Image 1 (cartoon, rainbow, N blue to C red):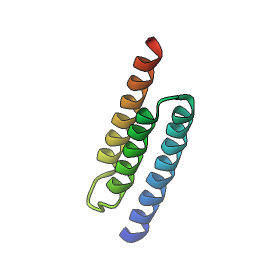
Image 2: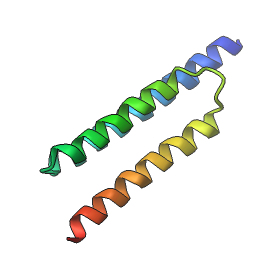
Image 3: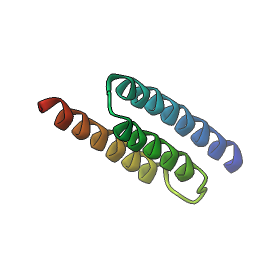
Length: 82
């Protein structure tokens, strides 16, 4: 039963990451600089590595995803202020 619960959590988090990646791709497409694009791809790879760790709690994963989205939002806002 625990394995099924863990599988459900992993599937749910995987969907969240895919959603985040699509959001990041949208931001990526709106940018003109290749170096800025690289940062977004690196962030996405980082989140995928994070999923490989089975001992992390769902709350920690949620906080990580929230922090990543907030950082992307700040970069986007900073770039579009200029």
